[in-house]
Amino acid sequence: MLTHTFATAMGPCSIQWEQDKVTRFMLRTSVEDSTQPPSWLQPLLPRVQRHLQQGGEDFADVPLAWSQVSAFQKRVYRAALKIKSGQTATYGDLARAIGETPAVGRAVGNALGKNPWPLLVPCHRFVGANGKMTGFSAPGGIDTKLQLLSIEGSQFWGA
Image 1 (tube, rainbow, N blue to C red):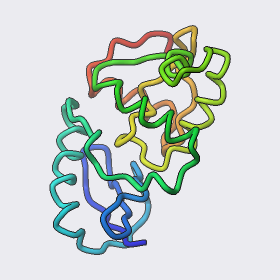
Image 2 (cartoon, rainbow, N blue to C red; image 1 turned 90 degrees about the vertical axis):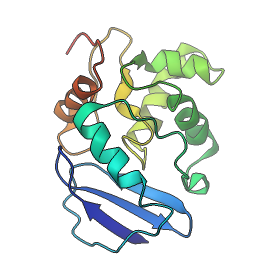
Image 3 (cartoon, one colour; image 1 turned 135 degrees about the horizontal axis):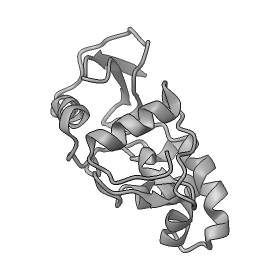
Image 4 (tube, rainbow, N blue to C red; image 1 turned 45 degrees about the horizontal axis):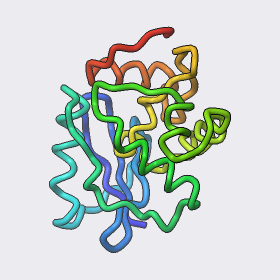
C-alpha cells in the first residue's frame, strides 16, 4: 500500500491507498512514509485539513476499499456516513439504522472500533446509550474524540 502523511491542525495524518481506493486513514499518526498522492486523492487532503480546523466537511464521496471489511462492517460504516458533522447518535441508533435492534449496539461499537477510516467514516460521532463517551481507537482515545466533536460543534453530553 502507498502512504502519504500530511500536516493538519490536529497533527500528522496519513492516508493509504491502492489503485483508486482509500484503504486506510490515520489520525495523529507516527507513520512517516510519504509518497506523492495520485491526482484523484489530492483534493481530499485540504478537505481533511479544513475539517480538522473548523468541521463541516462530508467525506461520504471518498472512494473507500469496501472489499477489505466484512458485510456487517460495511452496513455499519455506510450508515455512520449519514451522521453529519455537528451531530451525534448512539450505538443503538446506528444498530436501528441498519435494521437491527438496539441490543446489537455492542457489535456496532466493535465494528466502529475496527474502522480503517476514522474521520472519513465518522466513528467518533457515536456515544453510549446514556450519553457517555466511550472508547475511540485513534491515538489520544476519548480526548481525540472529544476534540473532533468540539471542532464539529456537536452538542454532546456525559463526557
